[in-house]
Each structure stands twice: as structure tokens, then as C-alpha cells.
Image (cartoon, rainbow, N blue to C red):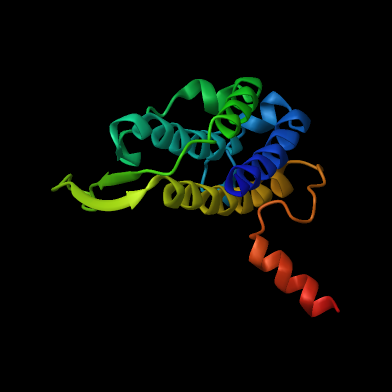
Length: 166
């Protein structure tokens, strides 16, 4: 599936970064990320995909009910292996699903929205790229690691920039 290849490409970029970061850099709170760590952003990415995969069987995905596993945000090797596993397990057939979420910070009523697996993979892919853009800012603030030009950049933006350069 072309969609899975796109997720694998982005996961591969993120995994390359995880290999280059030190454990300390991965866990270091960053002022430019409002005190968050690169590890917390990686955890957030991984857990949304985990929610989607867990919801595949039941037909219900609820991103609000993620685990918030500290091991993902503190252990970059664990996070690396998890991201590769997630990217390899997305080749599933499309199916109808329900997205459940609460959009009231007071913990109000659950809203249920019809969706499907592929649409949620697209959402997670776009969400990942968005968080990778934030991770890029964090990396530039704490490390001298040079990220590839497309890290955290949407494919449409990459295509636009190429068209403008011609």
C-alpha cells in the first residue's frame, strides 16, 4: 500500500534521528518546546498509531485513551524499535471505524464520528509530520545534528518548493 510506504519513509527519518541523538538529548526538556522533550513528541506520535492499530479489531479508535508510556519518551532505542514495528504493521485492509473523542476539557460527552482505517492512517501521517517539524526545532535548539531537508516537511510543501526552484 502506498500509504504504508509513506508512513515507513517518515518513520525511517525519525528512526535515523533517534540513532543520532544521545539519551540525554532525547530526554532533555527544551524551552522552545515549552519544556517538552523530543522523547515526549516521539511518544505522542507512536501512541496515536498504537491507538489506531488497537482500534482496528474493535472498529473504534479513541486517541484520548492512549497509555502515555514513559518508556517511549525516555528510551530512544525502545522508541526506535516501536516505530519500526508500527510502520510494518499498517498493511491492513481498509474498514469502517468510529472515532471517539471528547472535545471538552471538562470531560464532557464523547463524540462519535464515522471514519475509516485509511483516513486515520492519513491523519496519523500528517500528525507525525507536524510533530516532526516541532522535533526539528527542538533538535536545532539542543544539538548540532543536521537533519535532512525534508524532515518534518509535508510532501505537498516539498513539491511546491521544487516547482518554485525551477
